[in-house]
Image (cartoon, rainbow, N blue to C red; front, side, top):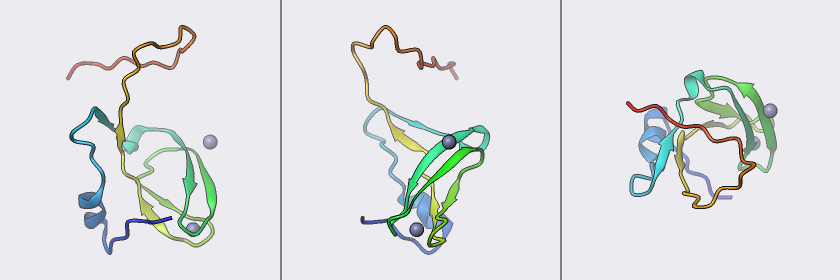
Length: 93
Ligand SMILES: [Zn+2]
Ligand SMILES: [Zn+2]
């Protein structure tokens, strides 16, 4: 597993994938309760359960700390199944 590694936080911010050329979104971790499966480079898998302000995660096994990129790719679905009820419509800025 190849990881991006930097010396300081500001470098991680500059190095994050931003998906500028494709539909994308950005998660504001501050007010966002999140469940997250974390897979560390050391091989440890852990779980963050409904925490807020998850800008960084720490591996409970090796103590490595990772910056969490909030940028995510959006994939358009042309035919959504009728029973899908986890669709949230945005508000216009
Ligand atoms: Zn959870
Ligand atoms: Zn680890």
